[in-house]
Length: 202
Image 1: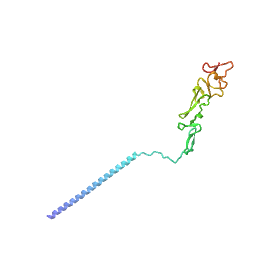
Image 2: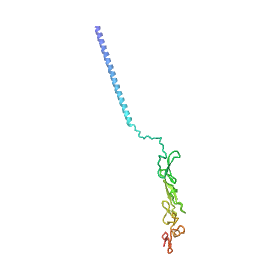
Image 3: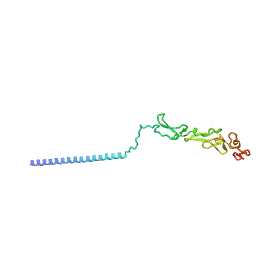
Image 4: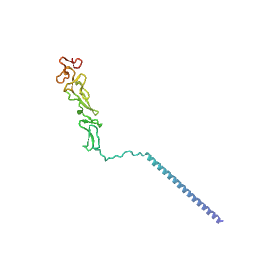
């Protein structure tokens, strides 16, 4: 009887050991499966992160610049009324003599010396100024001057005769018949009249 009980007990122990072994194997397999799944999810997450980073990355479209290429007067093209100088070690465009670029817009226009506002006219104050980079004449209105270069005479004044073509004189008989700068030469049977505000022969 004891031997039979012992045998049954041993059988029970064997079954318990076998069940325990199977349980351990099942646990190990489940753990391995879960680890594989976690690893797979981690790899997918890494892949998605890399893809997002690639999509968000802005491509470098800036062209390569050759900083070793220096600008010289042989490669620099200057506009009208200008030439290249490199006395300072840097090639740059500068205006020719009697031209200016006071507004620094890269265009060289005439200076007042070259533009000429008839400032040599006797008794007149015809002045020149550079306005917005361009020369402009301020003609002496009270001396009778007008026009782009102050070489024209406004109403009530008249351009002088030979040698005085750039000067204005009042349009009256005294000035018109002046020996030196007069412009009116009436016949012997005519006389000068300025009744209507200008000199004429009658």
